[in-house]
Length: 329
Image 1 (spheres, rainbow, N blue to C red):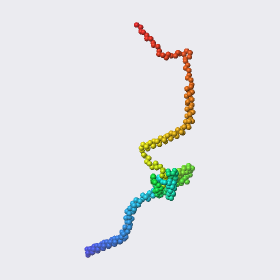
Image 2 (tube, helix red, strand yellow):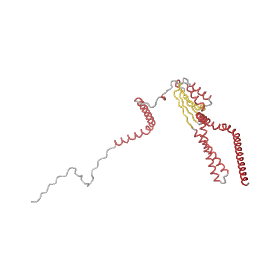
Image 3 (cartoon, rainbow, N blue to C red):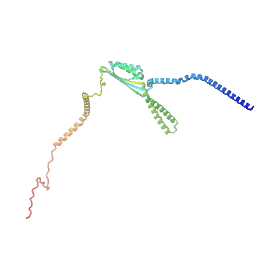
Image 4 (cartoon, rainbow, N blue to C red):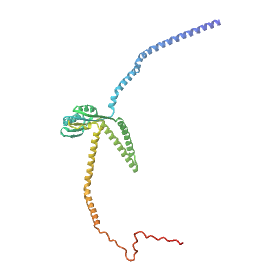
């Protein structure tokens, strides 16, 4: 009975264990199904969450496309000084000058300088026009249509880095001025007060200098400069010819020009010295001539011979010959 009981208990335990395993397997399957059901929505949302990642290449491409157009935007944001010079030959110089003044005024600019010379057909007008940077190129093109353009030169200067550097230096200098003023407010002794006042004055002067430079750069970048020269039909165009020409005639003309210039300088110096030569040279010359004449009229002094028992004058001729002595036999 004992063996039978033990065998029955073993069978019961085996049956219980098998039932537990079956229950565990069912629970795991249920949990897997639940997890699958609950994960279905995130799985469907995954593309939406992954959309930014998927759209990242599109954004990079967009950035690349923006980068191709970015130089224009960056140029607009940079500080650039535009300057230009022009020479235009027109029929009516005064009329062209008035049109140019009206054009620059219409763009919001002004005339910085005006020099005119009216000599019939060789009249000339030189205008310095300050125009907003955005209107620089259109105004240049408009001025070229007033007549026959003979020369045009456009120059640009990028001062962005200088402007940024000035901004940083101004901010730093303002902080230094404020700190010096705070120290000045807490000064107790006279020497300390005087020293801090000098330091505040020096720092404020440096700050004013930096701000003046910044205003100057802002003015140059905000308003471009165009120097246009209107000339008549008979105006000389010698300045447009090449200056490095060579040849005999060129050298001859150059030498003749130098010779005339040298003679002009020499005559100028001679004309400046002539009054002094007349004032000083004539009396000196007369005095020299009188002294020479007096020396020529003065008689020669008489020759005085020896007096009393002086020695006779030495013979001037050769000494007489001395007779030879004979030797004894």
